[in-house]
Amino acid sequence: MSICCCLMEMILTQFDAASIRAQFPILAQEVNGHPLVYLDNAATTQKPNSVIDAIANYYRYDNSNVHRGAHALSDRATEKFELARAQLAAFINAPTKEQLLWTRGTTEGINLVAASWGRANLKSGDRVLVSAMEHHSNIVPWQMVAELTGATVEPIAVNASGTIDMDAFAAQLDARVKMVAVGHVSNALGSINPIKEIIALAHAQGAQVLIDAAQSIAHLPIDVQALDCDFLVFSGHKMFGPTGIGALYGKRDLLEAMSPYQGGGEMIESVSFTGTVYNQLPYKFEAGTPNIAGAIGLAAAVDFLQSFDRSAADAHEQQLLNSAQLQLLELGGYQLVGTSANKTAVMSFVCDFAHPQDVGMLLDQQGVAVRTGNHCAQPIMDQFAIPGTVRASFSLYNNQDDVAKLMAALKKAKMFLA
Image 1 (tube, rainbow, N blue to C red):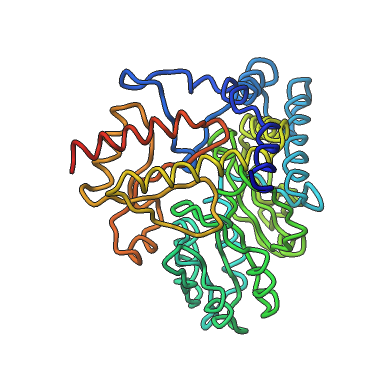
Image 2: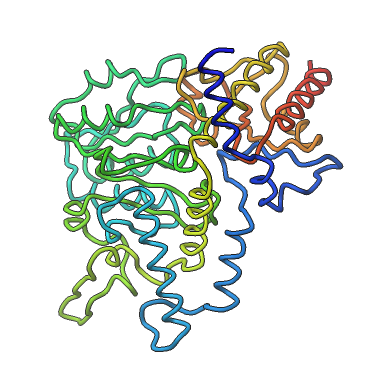
């Protein structure tokens, strides 16, 4: 046995997938008469008991609005809410908790930066670069602000394997590029982009960089100070937390200079009809009553992620991906889309004999949950000249039995549809 294989086995012995899986009650059910095989983790992850309990206990015992109450419930809610902010800030190694802003998720975070930073800093002739494999949420907000400012939004080339063409990217950069917005990991292909190199190249030309970490936050360690990114956004529901909550990290000088995105409530220091004074960071970007339960649930998700060896979890997921990809190609009639050598546990594929939607429906009848379509990444699908893919995405609670059931379902789909 090779040294590499021995190291992999040693890492995997530190990760007990069975005990992890047991913490997710939803996985114990049957769908259409079959045990559920949940392989739609790139869309949203399932929630462990600890996250469910944290949310339920907030509503059972601490439910109150934060910051403004003069009673015990408000004090307890405020303490847990702000502790959650500090915990998330530490999780990504933000310099201060004030640089961690609560949002409804990745999409709102990008829209906030595009609207607040973009309107103030972009003008006619300026350029915004986004990769050709971006989620629509990291394309459309920039197009909207470009229409208002006269800037242009241009794609960064992606090659046939689903990898950013770094030579082409470097050639695109000049003094007119004001923002580079790129995903850490492609939701459609699973490709892990070299964001540290991208950030360094962009900064050398004076551009700011926003990183969409929605797909990487549950799989890879993130250190915003080591990366030196200007903004970073992510969603709670893709890292075992609740829906409707996410975060935006920004460098302090940029956040201080930006105008509020929305008005009312928490973002106010004082109001009169002669003018309004905005609150300090982070509150000036958090208008209205926040998602208190969501923040508390997201902190519990961070606790969950930090309860085991994350490198071991990543090795487990990579083993599932490698096994699934090899078995898929052995079935015949299926082709992988996105073959970068550096991927997270996302397997996108098409088949010779049917539309992806038809394959997905047959898999669902056998209890296998996957996603089909363009995955909100239509430009890269257009580049590959396909209508979409079937996407099976793995998480730490999946196992080789899930892979075997996926392959059996795909074999049956081929029998019915070919």
